Length: 374
Ligand code: GLU
Image (cartoon, rainbow, N blue to C red):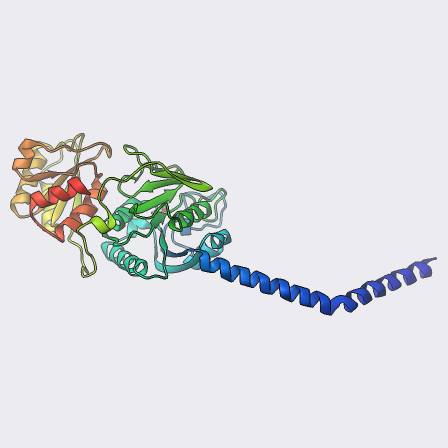
């Protein structure tokens, strides 16, 4: 009985092997033809897809930790650009992706030098016919500063999108992959053309001019509180707001020949602040100061003495607000002393604009005009 069963199994195996070997050439041909069609299709598709370059600078989006539950104690900038791209293969269906590592740092360590390197490279790439859009991966802490700098110095209508994440790549519910996918989608889109630098996180599209980080740890941290976002990504891209402030090709700033930006420091206003803060900044080489005043850019009498002395020594002083929202309106009394108002720019973005303004002029009236326009 057992012998009979064994025989049947052996016969069965022979039959299966025999069958498959007799069909081999035909199957191979079929498989080859299939591969060729697939390759031709991919080639065709790649030709029609936009080319998006990812410029990586580090941050949590490139962060990693051993623990999947670690969302605050991890190493930012631990993963390279190739790993970021490999982690989201779906991006290849919407664009031809390539990457470059500009830096791999936590964005609290972003410097003017790296900012210039990134912006010059972005301008170079966008000037080429081979690049249709750029995505910059960045730590979220100072993301808005880099994004606003790019918004003022990029000389192209092609999309440029800055993206980050709040959870490292190793965490449960990491937001990096979906944010990166969405950023590529926006950078590859027609809708993003001519809109200045955009920031994409948490399914929202924001203008670099208005967006700011509002929460230390949560994924919904980026808000454009006064103005609203300019759109959302719900598989498709929906744009519902226009950008009225000047940006990219419309600005006066040309960084192509600039190797060093003027030092601009931020002084935070508080009860019992004083003149010595301004004196210290001046001694440290500042060419400009942004004062994060209370309320509508208010400045104490003691600090005002320092601000006026700084202006008399040729420095530019701009009042912004530590409230981070609303307009700092011009004050007749302070205008007479040539203390400028930041319009609706928060202190960190005011510093970015003042650095660029000082590459063009020291004239307070001209600098004020920049603040009103950009
Ligand atoms: N501090 C780090 C940075 O800004 C991590 C914060 C983040 O990317 O969310 O790069």
